[in-house]
Length: 182
Picture 1 (spheres, helix red, strand yellow):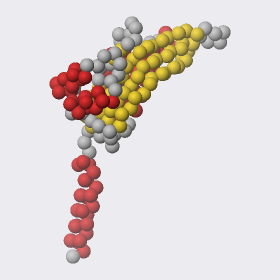
Picture 2 (tube, helix red, strand yellow; picture 1 turned 60 degrees about the vertical axis):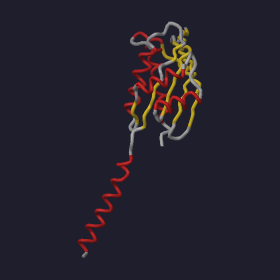
Picture 3 (spheres, one colour; picture 1 turned 45 degrees about the horizontal axis):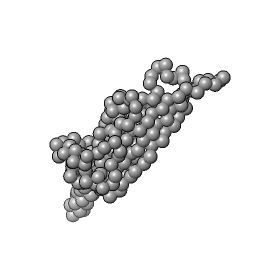
Picture 4 (cartoon, helix red, strand yellow; picture 1 turned 45 degrees about the vertical axis):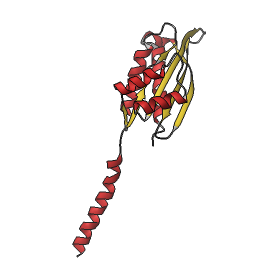
């Protein structure tokens, strides 16, 4: 009798431990095209998609969606040169059948060299907006992007520091938008 009771108890415990694994489902994410208002900065789109997709892939529980239904919902929203508001993102999420909708707008990337007697520095200022809507929680976020950094000029000889900083901004905004999953 003890063996039967022990076997039954072990079966119930194994079932209880495995139930949470069965309910885990990936949240679907719609990444709207970048709204690029920056003058003469064409590579912003490539950096945006590269960093956004890699950030989503590194986060567990998220799946980026791209299909005809979502494309039709984005086209119907008729987004201009400003990030969409709450009502538009709610409509895109509902009509595109996604859990999270993310939109980012790049307004300006300024790079200025500051000369000094110690060390020359590059001042990079990135301006824009980011909005996201999470249908799982009903949360809408509208954030202003104002990223300013000083970097020693010597680093600019090896790589494009403004591209690197834009990539950091995209990664940070995507992580913030995905943080509110329940």
